[in-house]
Image: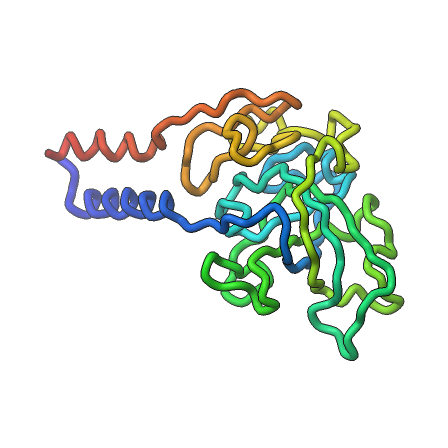
Length: 247
């Protein structure tokens, strides 16, 4: 027989998983307005999606958590490519409006964690402080991005208003011509999910939400993707088995 404390803990865990299953991820359009920050991603680093180390040789970015679709590891945002175009800095005194339009195509390989007030704080009901629901955190500096990408003689201003457009990776991303830069790290198995060319609405080549424990992700260790296999979360099965022993 299980003690009441263990039963309480298992019940709490079970219903916390149910709440995760109903998480409200941002359902964003293929084009729109967003903000862009940047962060340091070491060359060859395997980020949350589990994309190959060679992906860091090309432009990559982290996507804000509620658009990324997971609180840890892979999510539906993994592997998607976006054309990001600079508009103007969020904070600049005096206001700065670049005379040259700069843009870059990035592949999402990482998540930018949700915070209360940060630039990745956008949720379905509340944008960040710049009024954007999405934030792209560009991996920069990077040898894949020109030093003069941010059009200012003095600074990059830290945070930019941008437009984003979803684009096909294999046509537009600089790393698409290098097979080694595509897909997931094979040795990570089901702990990684980074499609070479994800397409919305096609569950065979997009990643499920790791937070929602939707099941085993598609095999994205090569350029081809296996069908998505759905299964009950193992923890839920264990809970039901333990509960049956108590009854």
